[in-house]
Image 1 (tube, rainbow, N blue to C red):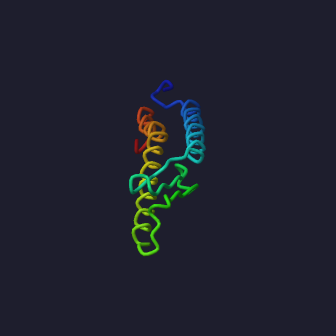
Image 2: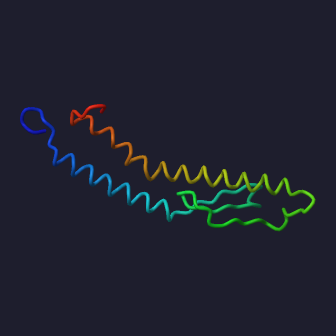
Image 3: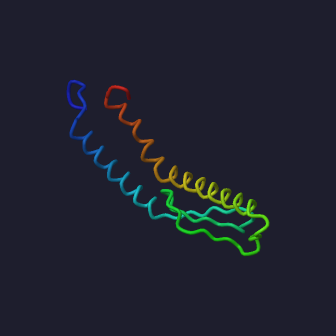
Length: 113
């Protein structure tokens, strides 16, 4: 803080720029990081980026039954949900420390902090 209790705006701007760079780096890492979800003890596997882009679907031939397509569909949905859960966990791991730091601005006497 500057004399008179006023926040040092250049310091706030530097911190905001640093946080923005860290967020951009984390977002890029999430766009490239892959997670895999599975269902049926691995009979169906879905690989996606942590940003949600499906990259690969693997189906064990043992599970393919033309008379029971519904089970395969259910397993595929389960694997996709498992992959989405894993992606959310990775996002929280990467972004949590960065977005959690937003509360630190309260020390600068900013409104709403």
